[in-house]
Amino acid sequence: MDFLQLAADRYSVRSFSDHPIEPEKMEKILKAGQLAPTAVNFQPQKIYILKSKNAIKKIRSLTRFAYDAPVVLLLCADISRVWKSPVEQGYDTGEMDVSIVCTYMMLEAWELGIGSVWVRGFDTRQVAKAFDLPENIKPICLLPIGYPSETSVPYTKWHNTFRPLNELAEVR
Ligand SMILES: Cc1cc2nc3c(=O)[nH]c(=O)nc-3n(C[C@H](O)[C@H](O)[C@H](O)COP(=O)(O)O)c2cc1C
Image (cartoon, rainbow, N blue to C red; front, side, top):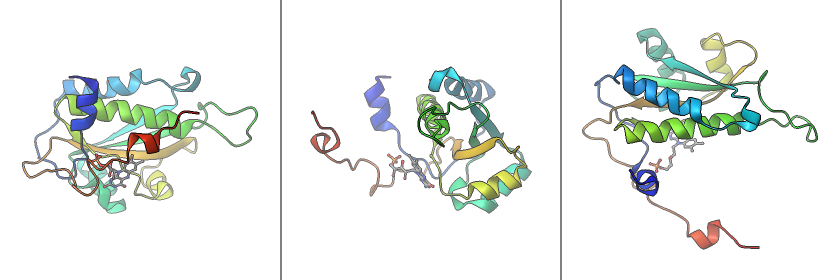
């Protein structure tokens, strides 16, 4: 599919069907996350595939934004691997690295007919504790994924409402 068409068609899916994601499609989505660029190619992403009954119950109890997705990807940055700025103390690219990984996965999923929604509406400390994450693994975002339900539609208020390009971009 033409990239701009794919980008325009994709919308945040917040209502999912029970149809399971085929293993080969899941593999492709994960592959997209592997191919994403990261700072200095340090590849600090760590992705947990939450799909057991227990894991899904747990994540749904921690955020209402897991919706009814059959699978929730918990995308984290391994802070022992991230690029750290030698000049700006305390700055690292963990969030940026994981964001581009998430973007690639979200777009690959859509290409395969699988919907997703990027989620930051959760408490990272609660999630780290509930899933017993190691100290160096920092949750960045969630990506609930699955086939859209028959009733799934874009939120009209948010989807397809764009600020003009000449406001977003400026030549200097
Ligand atoms: C960084 C980020 C955080 C987001 N967090 C949430 C969230 O917690 N819950 C939710 O339902 N949607 C969340 N979204 C989805 C946005 O609301 C959505 O992408 C935006 O309104 C545009 O709509 P569209 O994706 O349907 O085009 C998030 C998106 C981004 C990029």
